[in-house]
Length: 77
Image 1: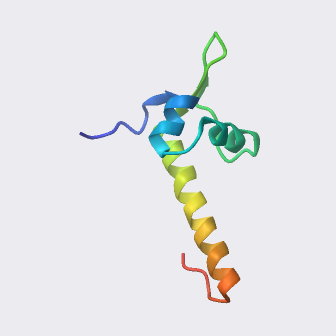
Image 2 (image 1 turned 90 degrees about the vertical axis):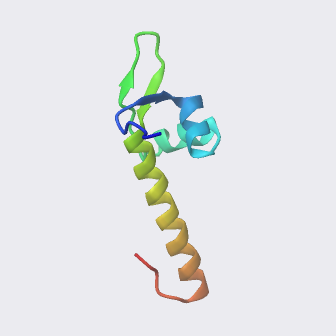
């Protein structure tokens, strides 16, 4: 099955999709790491799959860089 990068997910679905808590999705939004694609009339925040993937990748790279720095090794790109 091919995922549509423009598909929209709510906070709970986004958390499930990435394997993280919905609270972490909210934290990323507050820290401006993740920008909602849309807010519905009833106030539901929706996120684009492509944006979720980008934050996931950036977070993994940041964590890898941080671990390597602590070990005294050069960070990998």
